[in-house]
Image 1: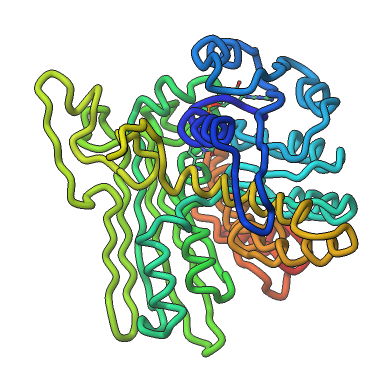
Image 2: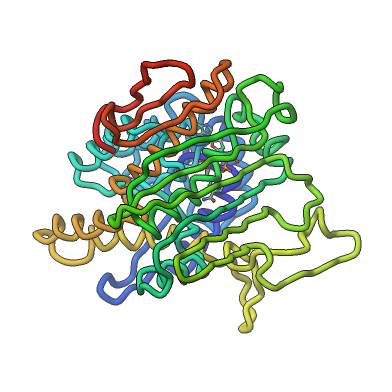
Length: 413
Ligand SMILES: NC(=O)c1ccc[n+]([C@@H]2O[C@H](COP(=O)([O-])OP(=O)(O)OC[C@H]3O[C@@H](n4cnc5c(N)ncnc54)[C@H](O)[C@@H]3O)[C@@H](O)[C@H]2O)c1
């Protein structure tokens, strides 16, 4: 495990604790023993705190900290490694893991540029291992239903839509304060919806535009963004287009009734999909607790903590399921049949476009475009437009008032 911050605590920890206690079982694979063997973090303090708190809930793991921690972690015999560091620190760790011939699961956004993506995919290919990215929203039952209706042609041709994900101020103010300078909430959270749109509706990404606001987390004309709005235009085989707006923020007041605000609307030729991931039906008020210690509206589908009817305490949901699913994919490659069939099993698992890095190209192109547009805006050149696969290159940035475009990636996206 590389990085043991918020997302480790929310999803990886419950997965590893459950796997430690119960193992993983699947009939063709048998009984799988999955243990957290080693961790690499920046300072080591969170790893020590977790070790003390978890006691026998987790396998005794080795902890490596500071410079070279990932490399030292990789001296252990590992089957797979997960990267949950800040988004601009995924690439180096992911590269080292793949070079060591270890299966990789990396948090979203996988990487911030297409050239980094190319490099990771090439390493995975050369070493014969999986390189996968976590997009847990694709496993949200509501989004699975949306995709099912689209796949079954019940909802026909998406025309446009919007998505919003608003994080509380405590994310930018304290949780991420160590690494937030120069960053934006778009890359960090819009990417969930970029992938949802890309995976659910298919099509070719053509254009990305973006704008945003500053002045709360950092200077009003500095490189750190409070909120970001981006628009993507896609074209489908029919030649028709669709536009999607994604609004994100990490400066929502901390007394907001939910942990995050998440809403989508998609408009089709013959229908309308409205989804609200926070208001799924539960509102709960507790004197002296809500909305600070406890939230009024809660997402009981992501990583809810429960007292099961049979008395057991559990933590479950799609945020944890997505990690378990990856581990089952690794297990299928390594243990799903005889050694002669490993290549075929690897190919099968690589064809899963929901999480394979090779299928993340348009998403990474959108992220790279967003990063470039915000960077140029912070440097006095607002309103650039990124075009994908036009006659100038794979990813090209057009600056207002300049005849010469800037080619960010030459190859086809
Ligand atoms: N799937 C989701 O919905 C979801 C939710 C939150 C975060 N994330 C993703 O998870 C990643 C981490 O987010 P977080 O919320 O856990 O952040 P965080 O700031 O809470 O934790 C980051 C962790 O990375 C470690 N770290 C930092 N630099 C490192 C380095 N160079 N080498 C090794 N360890 C290093 C830190 O010590 C810390 O343990 C981000 O990419 C983020 O986008 C995903």
